[in-house]
Length: 314
Image 1: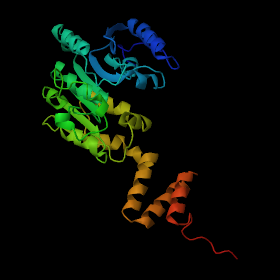
Image 2 (image 1 turned 45 degrees about the vertical axis):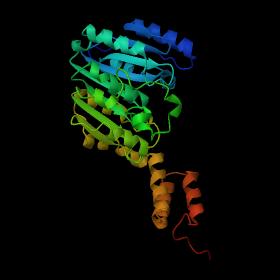
Image 3 (image 1 turned 180 degrees about the horizontal axis):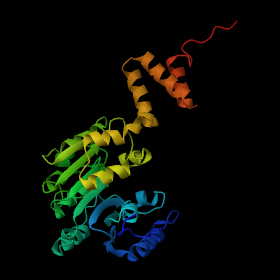
Image 4 (image 1 turned 90 degrees about the horizontal axis):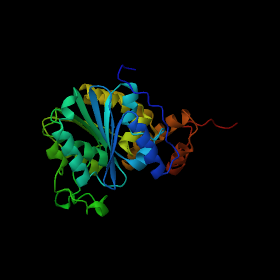
């Protein structure tokens, strides 16, 4: 705890969207300000210490968290950081004139200049938002997990995952995220290089002030996986401090070796490349650590025994 820590003890799990939003507003108003941004977005601000965490999150994803509070609230409570949250009620990629105007007002008021350190954070669409709006605070740091650079077809037609969202304009203000990070002090782009489309987006962010954090073997939503490994909070804290490095990120994510998704990837890759004995050995080792029927099924599919040297019955 710090002198700036805020006593936030709310838990908003189990509420429908409208009730959740009303309850969130009450929590925020006790410590800062809540600002609706048109129909599809809202901004929350917790006024605490001289470090500012800016997050971009989707309401449905926030409501699925253990306390249904934006991620930044934990750092306001534990570290005494101030927190500016931009919340989307839809899959908008934070492309909304109401957000542009809110950020413009903050710039005009010198809001970001009041803080010693500023970190913009988000994952996927939120990672796009963190990078795109970081231009509002020159000298800020940015941590973006598996961000899209843009969905504009002229640039990213190869990404067919979000075709239905291409009606959203990425060609106006705060549009092309890689161009918006030029004034940032430090930028970290975390992604799984085995996820081809995420890796292609990450490559578009290549700049002198960018460090790539490769999360090899971590499939699924990167923020959720890092949370599962206990790596997300220390990664965010290191980014705020400016001490995050690829080596530290690798150390923080070393728990992936016991992560089920990573293990399944290892076995699948071994099988696909014809290394059946290696795949079987991995399955046996993982099976010896706990009764997971998945590994037994893999051995059955390969026609391999669970015991490499079964005892000969007498």
